[in-house]
Image (tube, rainbow over all chains, first blue to last red; front, side, top):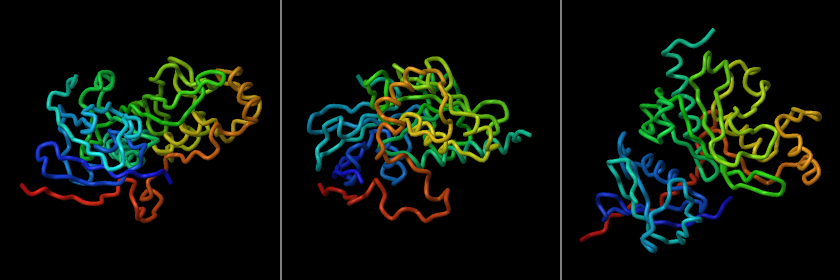
Length: 91
Length: 205
């Protein structure tokens, strides 16, 4: 079984809410978002919405489909969940 | 005889539920209603209650595969379209999105993935979209059962290379493939999820 790391997921609209989870280092952003929705931590993004993840240590936004390992997220790292209503680029 | 419209909606909902249960480090997907949405990565279907409208998928398999002699690519992106006549008796349309395409007898730029009539058509609809994901993962890992010697497909050169360097073995014999969800097999859910919630807390001001 692949090694898991602990990450703290920060709610997109209420930063006082933190979901701490253990997930495989190879988990992708897309999969993490789906799991957060399934767990009821965040609502579905809606048809024109989209979630993005940012590693607070580096302040870098992770790409869609990027793995935690590839993004350099450490064990115990904090990830901010951000919501876009435009569906447009976050650049 | 093909499915009626209501049955087709249920079949699409079923397929979506199966592949949703297979998401993980090796496999992920985006689901769409139309080819235009898929083309533009627009309006992906994210709610299970809308799954009956899904007929197009963009899927990613993170199975390292050959793209040339001794050259590997860590992941392959491909499209799947269930909107074909007489689905699921007819195999879904597939195509490779990522470039370069896998160096293999079953993949060719601009062509459907050669999944084999014995895999889909011969099963007369008793095969799921999740089975297709696992089958393609096996093709990428050169872990194929059953087409036998003499098969050359689209790339005899790749077959020769594989025979010489791997002697018929998978590229990664230890690879753990994405698995069909346990509910599909009638088994209880796994006790430990890959997404293991440790704590949900609220910080006090």
